[in-house]
Amino acid sequence: MTSVVRAGHLAPFFKASSNVLTNGLKPAVAVAVSSDKVVAQPLPHISTVQSLHGSLPIQGLKVRQSNKLSTQVRFAHSDIAVPDFSAYRRKETLDPTSRSKDNVDARHSFTYLIAGAGTVAGAYAAKTVVTQFVTSMAAAADVLALAKIEIKLDEIPEGKSVTFKWRGKPLFIRHRTAKEIAVEKAVPLQALRDPEADEARATQPEWLVVIGVCTHLGCVPIANAGDFGGYYCPCHGSHYDASGRIRKGPAPLNLEVPAHVFKEDGILVVG
Image 1 (cartoon, rainbow, N blue to C red):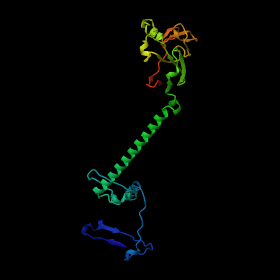
Image 2 (cartoon, one colour):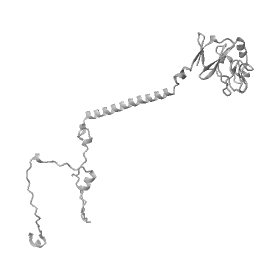
Image 3 (spheres, helix red, strand yellow):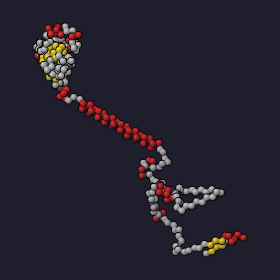
Image 4 (cartoon, rainbow, N blue to C red):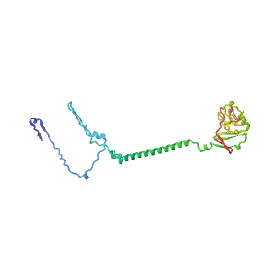
């Protein structure tokens, strides 16, 4: 088919020809279809990057620009598929445009409730761990049973020294005579290597309570022996008086006096 457009003396310049070739296709005819028979095809789940890449007319795009005319290329983004996150949203917040104050307050309350419960549980767990740790460091029951010892003083005659076992160490209980008390009180402190008054070591003058371990190398002295009538360590020759004070030999300190209490019924409690 050939068509010619005539427009005065410009007719020769407006001549155009067009050839139409048949390909055996029939023209499409619009037919009304009931809405019940229409099946909605779900959109393919593609990412935003893929949607942008497929929507932009970048294939075979050519732009020509001259110095006199400005040229702009604009791309339409109205048909880009946006990812749907409805499956991850709460029912109350499916509509992103709605903002209910009750819904916000409810979510805040739930958050505070979970945080408070977690804090209480953490504090209780920390308290339990600390309690168990401190308890594990405490002394065992058998050790606590030996922490204190009670001694009947009526069974110790005057002028004698009796040895007991206390916390795995020998304990010397000495019933001193009046002469021994007078001699020890008359000793000047300047003559002692480890100056200590007799009154500070014996709260009751007739009773002396000391641990029977030599302060030199931990040997056990012998009671009622030595040059000063108190205790004598035969290992290295340390002499103690009747107040347990070092008077001669290599020992640097006096015999240790443990914590003890005298009860009214004649019972001595050590420890």
